[in-house]
Length: 156
Image 1 (cartoon, rainbow, N blue to C red):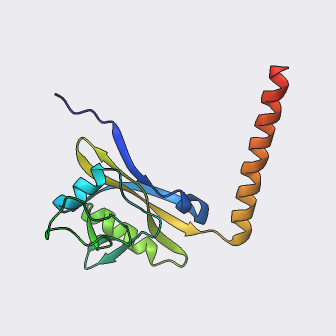
Image 2 (cartoon, one colour):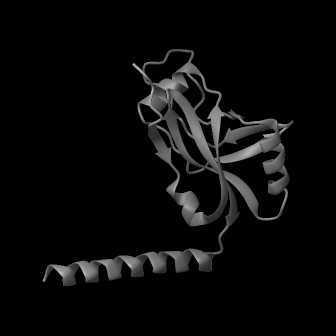
């Protein structure tokens, strides 16, 4: 049976798009243990408090919660452990340099499987101010109301 490039999404970080302006995105592989992969295949993970740190020329995903595998034994993993990201050296250097600028961070957006391998979509993000968040919510709400009004008018 041939593998397809269909993405099986495990977790999304909807809060990230509300909290940050997304400048650039990148797909990275993850170094995981066996019980982590099994827990992910059950669709259990939370990216809400996650971020990416750089240390010694390597990138790490931190704060992501992958719960312990229920059928795991003493070999189970720690739910919030630091996980290494698989990226090219040039990408790591470039993004590490960008995060040194004020107000820029790297956050995970989605965690998914592609052809049986766990991948994470990470984003270079700038923090929004409270006013920006309120304005974005207001714009979204106005667009929904306009869509509802047009839909109800078309049905009559």
